[in-house]
Image (cartoon, rainbow, N blue to C red; front, side):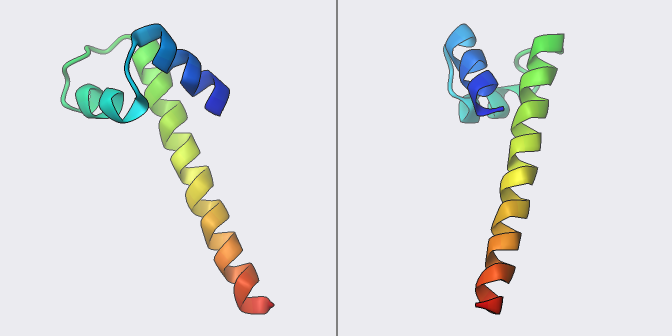
Length: 62
């Protein structure tokens, strides 16, 4: 997932934070590639949040 995100950053010459802001502001249009990039970012965010939650629960048990 991260590799694919890095490919988008290289292809469009902007980091993902810049992309997200511009995309969510409607500045980049509604191209399929942009929706895919945004979806990958959202999926990665969700996975990272879940991982953090699991790690916190694990630390409570130890």
